[in-house]
Every structure is written in structure tokens, then in C-alpha cells.
Image (cartoon, rainbow, N blue to C red; front, side):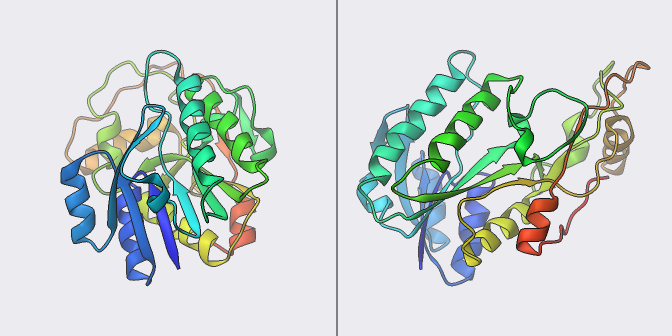
Length: 266
């Protein structure tokens, strides 16, 4: 089996390495020659590809000669036109997928597609995101899930942490932070990779899943403790705890995949 991963960064690169270990032929995209060399050393066929939002670089037709395509490119932090830019990226990509052998797309989305609300949210509650990046992700989800040429599954990951992104560094030393009572919705890199592999190996198509660890500690409890464990100055939260915020429920994923999270924040 062959898989192509669009975006071999913090998550995509170790995912590609794991797929190689599992016996897959893997093609991975990057935007730099240095990273391309690293991919090749790891047994991953590298492609230099950029979406600006048009596709440019190496032959996209060769890159898409796979059964499975994993799209792992976030909307980014552009100050303007975030939604329009990311949607244009994916529309341009879809035009190439339509002419390729790809039959199954896994799209890495985010829990930012949910509204700024209190209480538990499930997959059906997506809509009216607060940030433009959330609106971009939601629109792209709909584009992929309704396309007739291929099938897709969407993974809405929570906040990402793991190697190179320890929780203790996120807010260390910051003062007068708001929303101390808000619950966190986080997922470890290893769980992200395990879940993607389960989606592919079980051939679970046409689904949307939340993917966050089971435990949702309060910000004012978790981040100071995590900073202290690294010997860093803990963050300080204001007395006004703010809203409890949303708690992302991942029961659908656990039930459908039979998956149990290996890592819990806190």
C-alpha cells in the first residue's frame, strides 16, 4: 500500500516514519530542500510542494499516485484572508485529486470548528467558529466530505503536544491570564499518529471524529503544574476564572475505532 502525506511537519514527519515502519510506501511533501533530505534518509520519497494557494514545485501527479492521501496543512496564522486562502489551497488540490488514483482522503482538522460555548460538544455541534481559521477548516471539511470523486474522513484534533511541544512551556512565566476555569482539550502526538493509522488500517471512511484525551483539567490547575515539572516559572491566572468553556467529547471515535488514549494531560 502507498500513502501520500501533504505536510511533513511536526506531526506529518513522525507519522510518515511510523507508516514506513508498518510496511507502507510513503511519499511526503515539504517546502524546503533540507527537510526533503531528512525525509529521504527516513525512507520517505520526498516532494517539494508549495500551496500559495496554487500548487507549485515537484510533479503533483506523481505525488498523488497513492491509494491514500493525508492532508496535514493548517490554515496558518495569516493576518488577512485566512479562510479564503486555505479554502483556495484545498480547492486547487482537489482539482488534482480528481485526476489521480487517490480514493481515500484523511483530513487533519481541529476542534476550533466549534463555537465559543460552555459545556460538552460532539461532532454535530460544529458551526459558527469564533476564529477565521476555524471557519476555514469547517468549510474545507464540507468540501471534502461532499465530493463525489473520493471518500474522506475528518479528524478534529485538540491542542497538540508532545516531543518538542511540552505542555509546561505553553504558558510558562505569563501573567494575568484569563479563563483559568476553562477546561483544556488536548491530544498527544503519539495518540494522533495511532488514530490516523487506525483510521487507515480499519478503512473507516465518510466519518468525522473528535480526537481529544479523556481528561480535561482546568487551565489554572494544569499549566502551572506542568511548568513546575520542567523547572519553569508557572503562569499566573487572574482571580476571575471566566467561562468553563467547551469540553470536547471523543466517545464516537473511541467506540468506532475501539481506541483508548495512551496519554492524558495533567
